[in-house]
Amino acid sequence: MKLALVGRGKMGAAVAELARARHWEITCMCGSDRPLARVEIEAAEVVIEFTKPEAAVPNMEQLLAWKKDLVVGTTGWMDRLEHVRRLVERSGCGLLYGANFSVGMNLLFHLCRQAGGLFAGRDFAPFVFEAHHGAKKDAPSGSARELERQLREGGQARSVPVSSLRAGRFPGIHVVGFDAQFETVTLKHEVRDRRVFAEGALQAAEWIRGRKGIFTFSDMLQEQSAIGNQR
Image 1 (cartoon, rainbow, N blue to C red):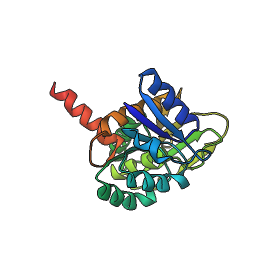
Image 2: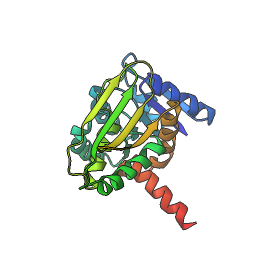
Image 3: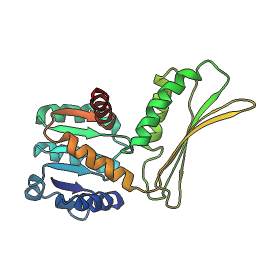
Image 4: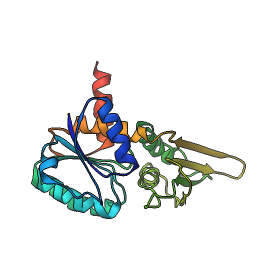
């Protein structure tokens, strides 16, 4: 596969490393120090975008105008989702986005929805805590916001406080907890290597190629699970 990468940070480097190990061609790696180049972008079958919240939507606008299928790993732009959805519809391309590209985290999202209902109405106070490296810009993380949303949609009526830590080199830690007078229940997801996100992004690039419409990483996993269950 021919792949273009938008974002020259740690995630872009991790994606490039795994893509080359698969013998995929990287047509370009663009970033704030290397603007999008149409001729290099057009040579790619799919573009993967890992940048900053303030850059994500302008990048999507340009890339969709160039009719490129996209995987967007940047978080912090979801207030513009309907705008992006309209862009995707007009472009006739495919776009896959996710709060997190870890399979384990996406399974935790589903667990949180179930837990939200199980603990609803009981004397357990819910909470979400997340920790990331000091360079991460958005706080709370997109994953923490999604965990909180899944708890509420599962039936958790209580307020769910979300707290964040930005320090050191943590690739990502997320804890969902329910605290009562004499006991605490926690669910924890901890990343040991950011390559887990890169692997998920490459799976997403294979899946989105040639599709039309806007999808989430969870949509991809659900389809894969359904196909696996039919075998």
